[in-house]
Length: 139
Image (cartoon, rainbow, N blue to C red; front, side):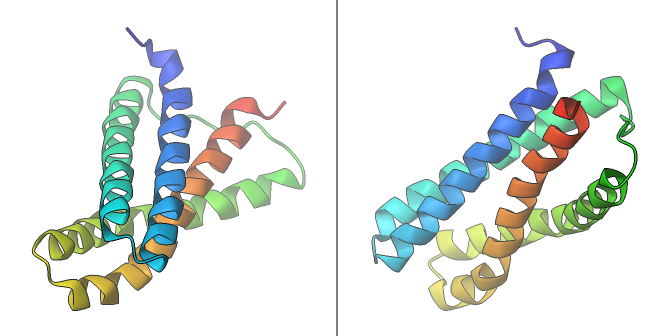
């Protein structure tokens, strides 16, 4: 069983895996390998979904965690956090719409939204790991 104190590390791992699957999925579709693209994107969606559940459980139990860094790092952290948070709120509907369009084989509509969804989702996944490192691992 995972303890509450381990959830931030799990969340960072899930964000990392999501980013890896997103990038791999992008490479697969650029290489015209639709089946591998589909598997990677479904894996990215699963990782992000598990992340969201774990994130909500953690913050329901712990609440907000304050950033303890001082000096020049503070505005950098908050800039990353604010952009991450705003874009994270857009990822959920973007990813869902993109996934639904692909599953319904509406590939033209899928491609139109995926061009926006992928970079935003990738940014959110990567900056989620950065926020974790800055919040929990920065000495």
